[in-house]
Amino acid sequence: MKDKAIVLLSGGLDSSTALFIAKKLHKCHCLIFDYGQKHIRELNSAVKIAKLAGCDYKIIKMCFPWKGSSLTDDGLNIPYHPRKKIGKSVPDTYVPGRNTIFISYAVSFAEAIGAKKIYIGANAVDFSGYPDCSPQYYAAFNNLLKFGTKRGDIKIEIPLIKKTKKEIVNLAFKYSVPLKYTWSCYRGGDVPCGHCDSCVLRQEGFSAAGKKDPLL
Image (cartoon, rainbow, N blue to C red; front, side, top):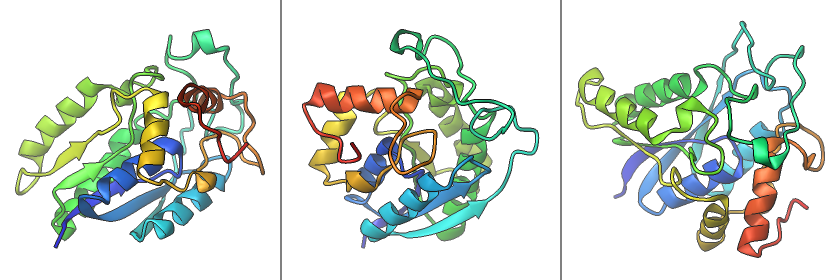
């Protein structure tokens, strides 16, 4: 019987690829967060991906009432940045403390069901503007878990942290991720906007890999 693992699943390219990597090794339980995003398209994608992966899932509903991010604050527009500016500074799509909160939920879930691994599709190569997507952040968090959990044996796994978007796209094809159901765009709608940071990076990844994005 496979060991249990928790996977933080947003429904995007990175988290979906991390799930399909993890499920080769573990019995995966997905956590999907409804945290006040401006659209539910990614939530629907996450549920679809979890079902197609044959994994159970839980939707955690919460909110960030203090806002502070263009992903959750109706008073802020989701920006379009020229590619050369992506990753040069912390963008206003950053949700303060989001990964710390999400991982904390995952740690609680892992302790409750006896899972030893938590997978997250964090990536620091193409989009290094988020402070909670750095290798140093996860190294520090893993050190914390040695002392802040009952058994001290839970570890966060970050299989994509040093991968380029090209490499992630290739891994998605290798692990047969159902890409047509993923959603990376920061905006909702029927098709990706093609202009937000996430869309631009996704497009570059598919182009560099010589693959066609089924969403386009």
